[in-house]
Image (tube, rainbow, N blue to C red; front, side):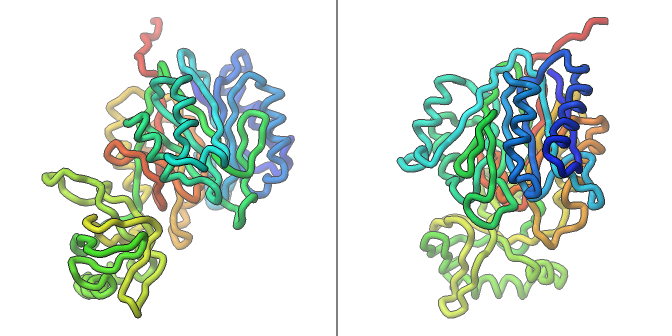
Amino acid sequence: MKFASAATRETDAARATQTLIAELEHQLGGGAQRPDLVFFYATPHLVRSMGAIVAGFMEAWGDTAVIGTTASGILHPTASPTNRPKLAAVAGILPGVAVVPFRMKLDDFEKAPIGLERWQSLLETVPEPELIVLHGDPFTTPATEILETLEMVAPGVDVVGGLASGARQPGGHILTLNDSLHRSGVVGVALAGDIRADVLVSQGYRPVGSTFEVTRSEGNVVHELDGVPALEALEQMVATLPRKDQALLRRGLMVGEMISDDEEEEIGRGNFLIRPVVALDHEEGAISVAGLLDTGQHIRFQVWDNTLVDDLQLLILPQLLDRPAAGGLIFGSWPSRGSSRGHGLWAGDVQNALGYPLPLAGFRTSGELGAIHGINYLHTHTAVLTLLRPRNRVTEPV
């Protein structure tokens, strides 16, 4: 197993693609072997050129599975606030790995459970996938429902990826699957065989205040917490916080839905599914969130403390005891008020934490996919890092 990654600031699509191909071939051994899989990510500057980019990859590697999407920002080790690539790619030679690309169309979303027939068809081809990578259009993809259906038919399978970003209206994103371009739905790939995926989900939020039980809710509107009008409960909690945390809450209010059911486990980072608060109804005393909250669920309010990169580095520490990863994918988003470490330094921080030059690429999403406690979720303001290795250790000849 061997990976390579490359990025370029070139704005001409044809030249940018050829630059990437040449660099990827060089890293993979001079073009002697074609990659089995390529992911590429392009900024909005290249939306109208996605056809030319795909044509370049397919001309160079016609039998390779090529998955791509447009994104508002590229995540790559070479990226920085002063060096923002327009196009990036990661490519892998994957011996002993089944690589099965697929697409989900709007028709696949019309019946409940959403996407069931498409998942069943995929699992007939790849009965025991190690990893599924999804890239979707945020305007047309019911990501949460898709993940719930997969959990029904293939529990425990890791799903990573993200929703495209950068467009402000439907039809503005481009997803690619080999030589086809799409403005809706999902493209992806399932991987099985001699491959192991370690998925790390880092959140840039920490819980504050006490834990509340949702005692009355309707859809995404929370009316009562612990039997008290939700807004009143929030205001009482905020009054008990240190001034620093009060200031952080004013910058952006989030709710963490508790997803750990282990009563003996310490509740903190990594035990919550983070959702933005989208409205405060002072007349009704209610709070609206970007997601459904049922009566009986437990929540804690969250503050963005700009430690997402630090958390990711801590999650990486156990990886230092393992053999080096061959390649990786990274997906994430962060508040616009976040630090200037932004557009690509996550990827560079990953390499620094690992201590070796991991071939890595990804993009800034409008929602990222990754598992917490074995269940796949759609997240916001997280970093999802996937490290890829052969499942079977190969003894190198002396």
